Length: 274
Image 1 (cartoon, helix red, strand yellow):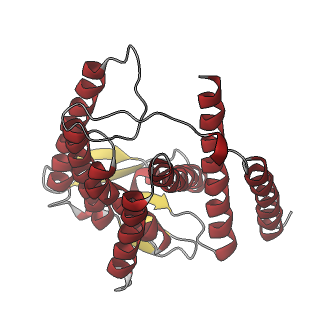
Image 2: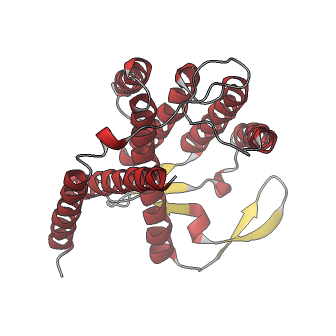
């Protein structure tokens, strides 16, 4: 069956499901009555209700540990991409068989790890709320940059990307600042979920497309600096980028919107039972 036709059918199906979900959620806003807790360290309102029996020490320990590990990951990412032998460079491959080294993208992931670790530390200090958004929105902005980079063939080619990223930051942060509870938290969470779902979908597609395109075959490579021979799978040398056609992009965005709305709906139902 024609791939374009299948994509169109998928778009229509997801659109119908998304519309049904929105209609069924029309009255949820009036039923949302969630008490708001105050931050442990600041006393300011935060984006979660008071939780009895909640062990803050476990959560804070997890947050700090995650921040430390992300910092280490960022350091290693920058270190390992500072000097790479040509034989060991991995390449993005698009639908037209164009190859782009992943070095810049790997460094972008390093920045993502570094900024995420900072958001974790700020989370520990002030908890998740309006104050945290001033840093938390940067985490999402890097995710948007990652998606844009993949869409552009693995490398930022447009000079307009800073303006688009800045516009996103202003929109996401402004609504989070000026909306009242719980809609400020709901807005920031939902738009973040859309980005997260798109990332999950795109990286999953990359994995399966790469596995399909290169399989498990291996090739012998020589490390000229250390003068030894190693066996490296072609899948480690090439990463197939996801389809960036308009129909594919529309489908992925609609699917992410639907999954995010479904997640929100489940949360409302859960709150109704508690």
